[in-house]
Length: 79
View 1: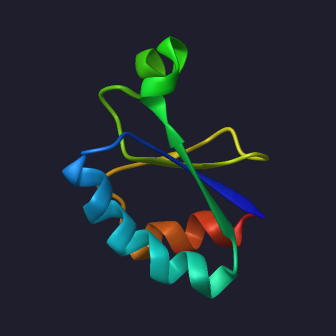
View 2 (view 1 turned 90 degrees about the horizontal axis):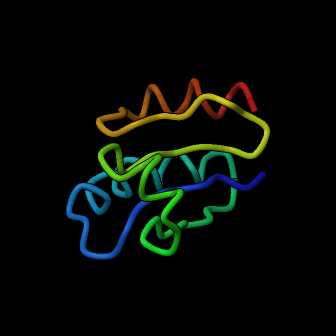
């Protein structure tokens, strides 16, 4: 399963979020695809004020930062 992590270089909140995300991600053995929102005007418009954001291909809902490891676990368990 591929998990999308919407962020941009130099985002200190994104680094904090990765510290919470990695342990849970490894528990589920999912792959992380980091998506740089700066590469697309559409992504900047959608995520510019919400990054970091975690999503998955088969889910319409997403997790905005400040998410907890418990919230990630619930999100991943439904995939």
